[in-house]
Image 1: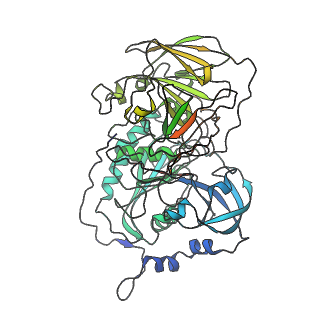
Image 2: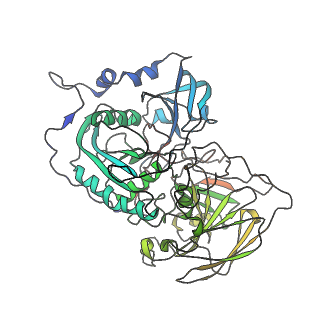
Image 3: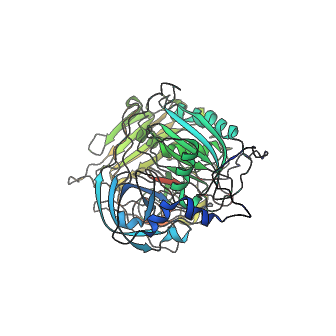
Length: 563
């Protein structure tokens, strides 16, 4: 989907800009030299001798280029100390650790990896590691006494690493946050999240560039006096096309009250809404396509390929937050969801239009292994009013099927009318057909959409219990689940595992395999999707730090920008 991004205002740069670069007498001093003088901590971390122990928070990021052409095979990982310094480590070396936890690692020598080849600071081998403290869930968001906001945003315009600003006015950035972005999250959470700008700062120059986003955020925060904390967000606007910078980048927080750091290079409201979604603890809304079947056989996993949802691809439309993400966030009230397990009797339910925000908006099916499938009903009403036959990509109204997962792809859209693999790229029609039995989870459920109307979709579900009881699969280590429901109940931890995929692409996306005797799908990567062992979130091509970080730069030529 192609997005027509709003043009930036190119106005004269404000006078009296606060510069963080030291003055020099004659000529210019290179950014590299300045970095060695002004930012010794990062350099020191890279030069510590083998055997050094570092204690700090494990943070992760998933790098990718701007146009959906490829993605990294694994997330980038860092250890961030309480002082805000960071040292990057190879992700396989910390695969058994949970992002957001405090860890102690013993460093080895520098090693080459995809991140360093893409321009990130060097990584250090991990010789040993221990968990000092597990990741903690933040408190539920609560209005600040002074502002009445649950989530306060500090906006800073930053020219990183010596690049020129692009003339964007801070008022324009703040207007997007206070307008469309705040409206979206307030509406989708029924007021549980109240987001707004409380502080703005004109253009500053930083020594740090995007090769070390943790250092960039730290330097900008110090310049404007930003103090991190629950419900506090630091949003940097960077010049469009700044070298080495992701299209957008955000920490994945532990919940909607965690706060977090973001940078963007565009004024798109859908992109900003997506990035704050990461701060709130949401992963991406992606898709899985299988060759002629809903699940199983030859499949591919495609990052961001949910055009209905704000946590999928960014384009001109921002639809209703899907039920998987709403449940994970804790804003799908229990009265608006119905749950059916594989051991329950057959049931017929009426699912209300998702955008109506009343009635049963989500039908959750929990299979024998504990994996949740969700059904929702999309109609061209409310926030989904654009969903007519005239929408650019032919997205359908109807009943949609998604599978819940852990980070990075916390929602996976399945194709209810699957096509042959040769037609995948152009197939955006995914609604379940009326009157056709659709098997799920290797036969755990059979779903039939009986009828569709303005009032709701009538859906019958027939569970089939396994002959032998199957214990739920242990969850792959992920960032903490979003902490506590703001209304209703939060989604349960997802049960996923991974299968190795083969193919000549440098990208990896989440892949899933059953733990029972049923045949697992053979997954191939989508063009421009991430692929690899375990679910990985696509992020930006820069060094990041935070709870768990996502870069959003997946832009396909002549396709919409991801968020």
